[in-house]
Structure formats: C-alpha cells, structure tokens
Image (cartoon, rainbow, N blue to C red; front, side, top):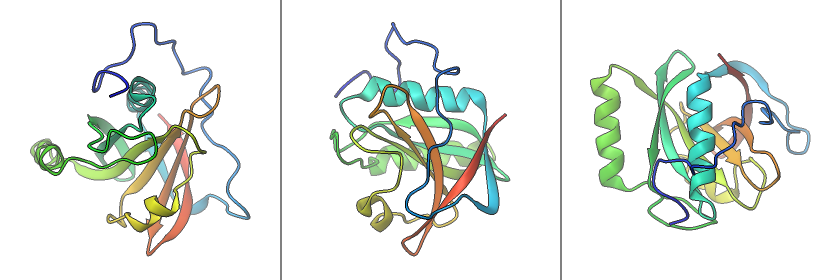
Length: 166
C-alpha cells in the first residue's frame, strides 16, 4: 500500500491555504441548488491527509453526520490496493456502519481519491454508486494541489453539489 492506513506522512504540509475547493464542472454541468454539503474543516483535512498518504493508490472512506453535514470521517483501507479503483472491505464497512449507528449519526458521504484524473465520478464510480442519498466526495491528487468536489449520483446521473467548509 502507498502509505500507512489512516495516517499522514510526517512531512505533510498544511493544505488549508492551498486546497482548491471547487473546480470547473464537466461539460455544461453546474452545481445544483438541491443542497449544500457542509464538511467540517477537520474532516476535509483528514480526507486530504488520507488521500496523500495512500498515493500511489486511491484512498477511500465514509463520512458521517446529519442534515447535509459531514462531521466525522472514517478512513478505510482500499481493498483493491490500486491506483485506478477502490473497494471498501465488507467487514470493515460493517464495523464502520455500526460505529456510525452507535454515534447516532447517519452515513452522509462516500469518499475516495483519484490519483491520475480529475475529481469527477468515473464511469465505474457511477455504475457502483449504490447509495443515492449519499454525497460522493472525490479528492484529486493528480495536480500540484488537491481538489475536493462532491456529487450526488442517482440512477447514473451525476450532479455536483456546492461544498462549504465550516
């Protein structure tokens, strides 16, 4: 694996000032007014650290909270150990679902990183989007600065969400 699971490299540089929160949308797509997805700053930081720690492989995890807000991030192991795909281990996923329930939170998002492409759901991401109420949060570590974007994926239709960090 490209890094220790769930930990950041010791020489990690603070990304808050350099992170690009949004990027141009794909051909003709705009962020929807359907909802704003709010991510706690420490959750954003944890996702970025996990994405960078797992390079060259994709990183993944689950987001918990409520009312359109991600308050907790659960970094998970990419069972594929791949720079092009990710898969949550079913046993680890069940344990995290139980933790989310025990905390009285809801699953609000599914996170993974793209190591070679933009932060936009691939055809595989769209095909494997089994949680229509969840936001799909992608962090691209393909460029000089991580790019974080969030989407809903329902019946293969991708809609970008406005993301706020507070």
